[in-house]
Image (cartoon, rainbow, N blue to C red; front, top):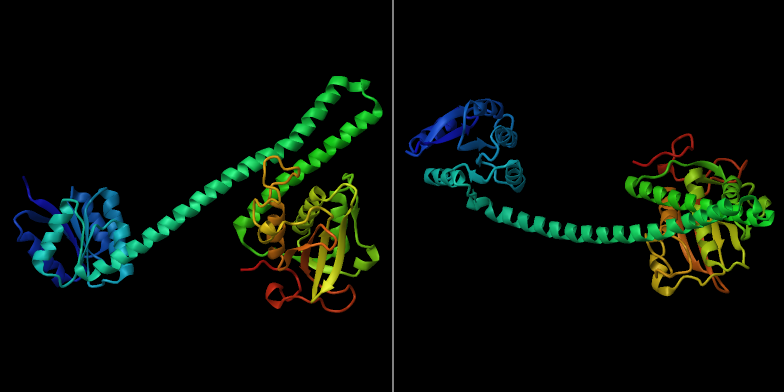
Length: 406
């Protein structure tokens, strides 16, 4: 059997010569290449098969780069890192680059040769000076890996639950549309005009419901992914409320809005589309849980430089056991599969994400006399014509326009 072929890379000439002399003296080893930097090491490695490489960590080009290139040229090549640096970051960098052994400069010659032979057999070793640090780091990595595994398991469970809920909620309006469409197709002109109108109105409501469900899921996913502040502009509150009127124009239940005169002078910092989505999800939640004979009531108040828009219903209220979780994703007042109320359990979560992105907030309250009240708090711009708007200086530019937070 021939001698094992060794590549040595070391930028200091005298030390490189000493390593070559040491390795050559071993009857089982042969130095086939000696490089002064990482780039020359990679170039020399193309000349033929190697059995092991001894690499200086801090040579020009870097030992980690050299290790990566050598293992690209010859996958599985055993790498022995050789360095005066024994800090945790240096050691881990080389291990990640593919080194299986790490020798500290100044180690006895026989120990260096033993490490090379172990590496050729595929056995890793570390100098005693760095073993404890690496073991501690590996323990931390193991703990982090276990925590990540638990988080992934929980996320997988949430995803499974979300898919089940989405399937249930989306099929509800789809089934309604399909059933009404089949009725119209079957009976056609034989349907009395009043019945046809009822079917058409039902299909419109189901379509609106489906549109809002899909919009809520899409918006929630986008906000959860971006984690950024929303770019806002001064928005008349009356315009925002008009958007809500249009959103629920075909809803048979009555929605009570504030008197136009009471909101005509109010402006808030808002991104109109997202703000509409936040308020609409809260209104829809109130419609789901409030009794048919009781209107959903919207009211406005000024509070500490904010404009608070509240949405109230006379439903069952929020049970104490879910009160602190009502804005978490997939939280539902009635989580059972036979619940009477629709909803993905993302509506209030979505509203909170939008409001936080606006620099505002949202909270839930028990309504006196029964029911629930959700309050959306917007940053106030100031009364129209009342001078400069009020805003948070770190969230607006010099022109008073909304800026995306960094």
